[in-house]
Length: 396
Image (tube, rainbow, N blue to C red; front, side, top):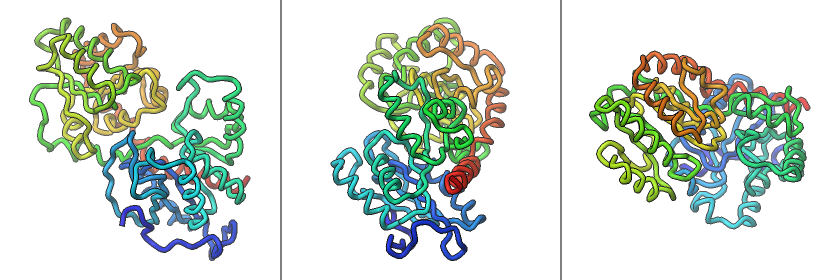
């Protein structure tokens, strides 16, 4: 049953604090706010790796649902899967209750090592405090990079103190690693491979037979409709693109929903684009696949983005990508002009040039190059990186 362990959990009184013997294998708990499709894909591969090396893992989430990501992920797992809050959205739970339940869950699971996704929300802080009180090694799972937001010196010092309570870290790529090193973590304790998706679910040969959602060629963007996703600028750039290429122009599909929807719709009307800009709403992964299967190009325009996992999905579907150079994945995934095109997300004309260039070139070769590059960024990469981080934490 989802939200419950798939096999019995031992209580804290039944386990010693830490043991790596054959009788008491290392148990790794992996804590996310809310498990969606790509979380399960990652942990599935880590579970397989654990079986190979004599460890075990437990998947833990703070809540079965949260407002930010409306995933529906009903899956059976071959490892224990526990929801701290199984019956409410995370945002509806008082901090005091959440902290109490995190402590109770971790007391029950009693992991040898705990991998914690971030340090900025109460549930994750509570898990870190629990680990410190119980002298359990901790692995930080982090997508943060230095330019995500404005940074104050005193907050960075506090953050640096907390980050350095972790014994190792698994991050997305090079910008994320540089940031943790700047906060004081030794570079030999920071491993890469965190930001991956289940590439196989998006493989072109699996999805190309899905029915076309739109008959005309189209650009695709998938975002929450919030200001930092920069969709108003995308619409302006797209309007300029249509003026330049005229009857050769592709349509534009914007998948998502959110607080900026009214502004986005008004901007579409202002440019008289209602017939060529499509708004299918928020789509679950299965509903999104036909759009990924038949888009000509994927566009991501964020002003601020820690990584941008939807870009992984688009590249795994074989699409060429146009990516804001503020996205955390840009340095690791985009080889300029080969696997995609980058641009300054505050430069509307630069984005228009990318739209024109991509739709007027051999864009399919770019998609094929991106597909080859994204193969490294797979759940197996996550499993390898987390294993390395766990071993590093145990050895500290």
